[in-house]
Image 1 (cartoon, rainbow, N blue to C red):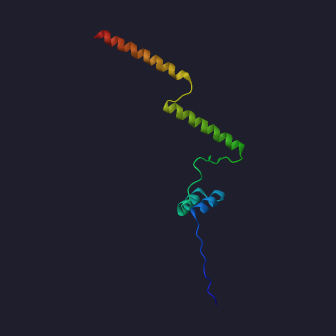
Image 2 (cartoon, rainbow, N blue to C red):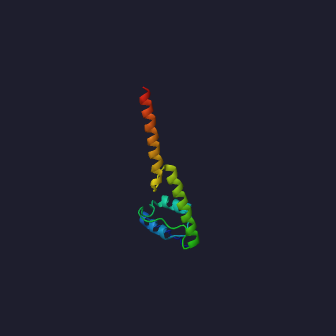
Length: 108
């Protein structure tokens, strides 16, 4: 009986990265483990993110609507708006403040 000699191969980080970019059957956790194990970085940082909707137009529209609602809520929360209507109340607040300051100065 002959003994079989095992062969081994070395997988480089570059080869692992190329293989992981082509593989579409792995879950995100499996892909993360393989990237960490072989030292393969994620795809290019400047590359666009893959579309979650794929070719499903209805799902794409729904996700776009959700994204727009979230962006609007974020702008409102941080005070960033595109319209000039928000600056009018600020001007009114300044006028009110000036009036109070003038009244306090007269009182002295």
